[in-house]
Length: 266
Image (cartoon, rainbow, N blue to C red; front, side, top):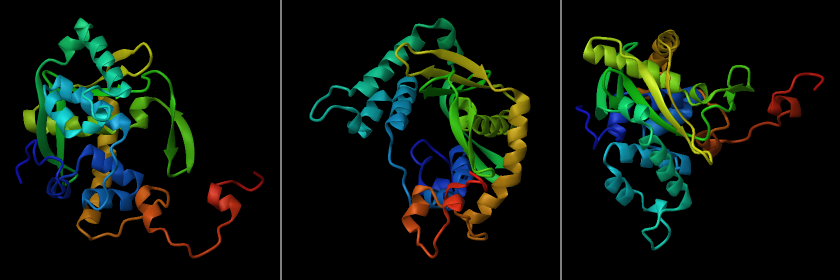
């Protein structure tokens, strides 16, 4: 199928193509990734997601359309924005008053690209494309460390926002698709703004060696996720995501240590 802005997020497109967000869904939980790809589970729109969409819409000149499609960003029976989206306007003003930031995001907006990684069809949509691939992110903080769960060790660990949200995975996919479409490896940058009282901002280039490492991981794992989508391999379950909770059936008593992942003596 030919991807357009109208069908990019459709179930048909999600079943035919993998994306960075879908890949990360499968990493979180294979059952969860499959349910989302098939349209059987739709993630509720969080405030953070709506805020990011609002900012993207502003810089791609789609704000009026975005507002009409998301009336929940306004006060009830009013055209007045809720305070969370007034805050986004403040962040937009911070960006627009920084000449370097604005120069960096000039170029084509919302550019759709497709390609193949590890034998799997992938899609991507660049926020900005010039001599670089630039993705815009609105985050709580660009400097403070957060916590991320490691499914292998079953432990949380501290990390930065790029690793926490898998933006390095997105960068690896976007850079590889760019190489396939434009014949050269383009730098991948995150243009980020924080939602703090005094918004912080930065243009962060994710190093090519990091993207290459992530790309190798994607080439290894994506074929399994594609096989799950095609019904060739059964998905594993994490036991804790919304989809697993929905279908959870008890069949045994679990010990305190096992349930909370504790070692002997803890």
